[in-house]
Image 1 (spheres, one colour):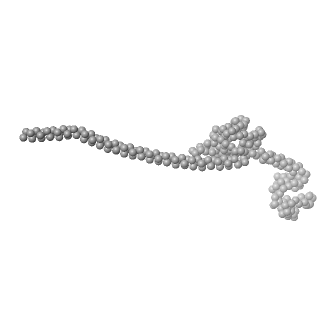
Image 2: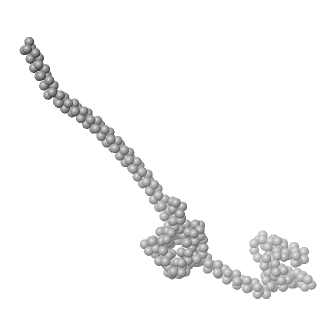
Image 3: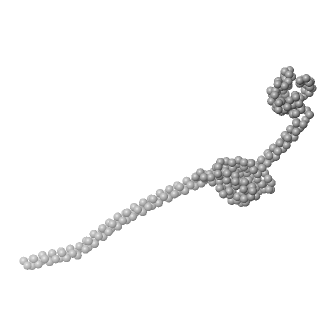
Length: 295
């Protein structure tokens, strides 16, 4: 009986010993499994984050590529527009220039370069004070300031000095141009040479003065009248013919000054001249008051 109990105790002791020995192994194995599971979850989480980052990077790169493409397209369109504007300015026969707010030349066309006798390198970035006498530069700057103050186009008559230093009468047309915020960023100007026109005007005024002197001092009756027989011009000799002053005669008609039969004859001749558009030489006799006059 004692042997049986002893055997049982030995077996229990062996089982308990095995359990004590296996328990740490089991715990270690459980921890290894849990660590492996956590590692797998971490790897899965890390892979997800990496995939999301790669996806976000791809989206960003795609958006950047799209933005770059749009910008290049816009730049191409802008360059095309600028090329058109430059070509348009170049073919304008009048000198054209444009400046910034500080009066520095940003560009010009061939006509302006020829007028100044300078190249682009000698013009761009310069101001009027670098290219002419101070008194003329002061006038140009003052009118530029007027444009920026009013923000309206300005047209005025002035003069320039050409490449030989000769004075040329011109008309300036200046107008502001604006930036994307609506602020005046500079101005553009067009120069029209009116030197020959001014010379022609002076010659015409001289011719008119000489003609007026001839008409005034001529001993011949000289007059001008319209289709209704109304006097528009008469010289002193003509006024004396009717015994009136020039002021009293101008605006009067034949019917107010001549007998009816003479008036009708004159109106008939006026109609004839308008029809054939050629000079007519006639000889007449009329009575003014008690005098008979032949002409």
